[in-house]
Length: 187
Image 1 (cartoon, rainbow, N blue to C red):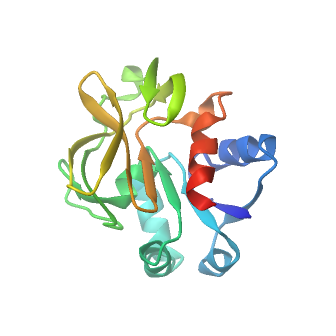
Image 2 (tube, rainbow, N blue to C red):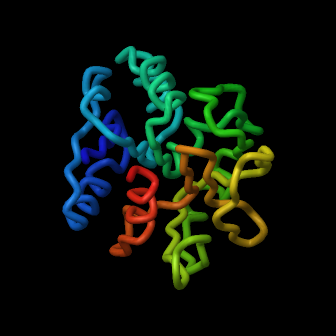
Image 3 (tube, helix red, strand yellow):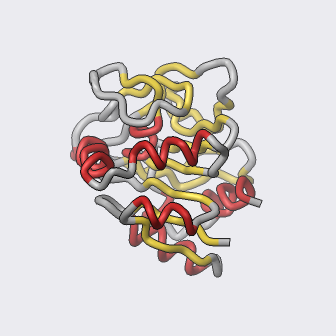
């Protein structure tokens, strides 16, 4: 199994390190040819507008959308969640509308509003350390979307078929359980 990590901008090295700790092979996805060599993909946190523009510049967006639509397991963290959302309530841009959610960009405020909290995630034992950095949250979900976690009344993790999204950054912790959860979606 090879997990690709979109490496155009953002916190991709941190995902590589966690996958290494789990003895999972990964590659950095920097062009559409790299998409042919992976069994799953992680779209990291970073700046959603920049990543969205780079997907266009490197002619990756349509190939990526097609592969995900055909069942490629994908996990979007923070900016990755924004990129996969069908609707962004406070932004006109839509990048790859593949999961039936409405997202609020920077829902938890600016950089100074960043925080860490331990909360439960459906399917994961014991509370998980959730690191929020200028994080979005999910305002609405479609009927086929499973809500996995809620923090202070806001949805912060969800899943629809082969797509997993989280508002928070599991790659910035030493806890491997969220990555292990994603790996179960691949097998």
